[in-house]
Image 1 (cartoon, one colour):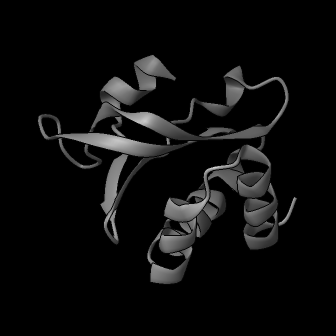
Image 2 (cartoon, one colour; image 1 turned 90 degrees about the vertical axis):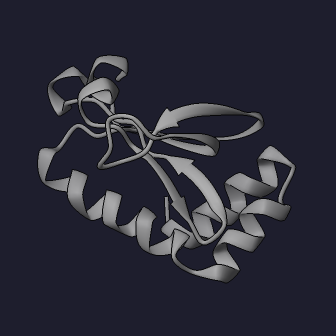
Image 3 (cartoon, helix red, strand yellow; image 1 turned 90 degrees about the horizontal axis):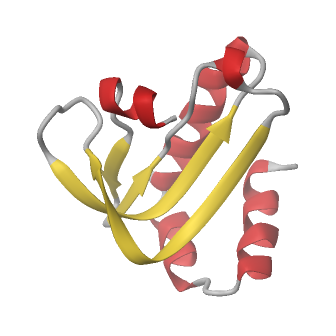
Length: 110
């Protein structure tokens, strides 16, 4: 993930929230997963499409995608949700990990 992030940065600023969607090449994933972490202290990531602009990320969606054809639809789905102001506002307000998990399952499915 770290090596791929250097070549393909994943930091994004969308709708007043800063997120990152780091992921690795599918050949390195043994079992698919999505890990979401709402950070108490932001972590700097390089902005997507840039090589020099750093942003302090508040939420990380780390993806372990096994099936290559699932990668683009999942990334698109996450980005679409973050373009919705209501979704972003709810993410900002949720501070409990169980509540966040329940909310994300309702938004994306299991």
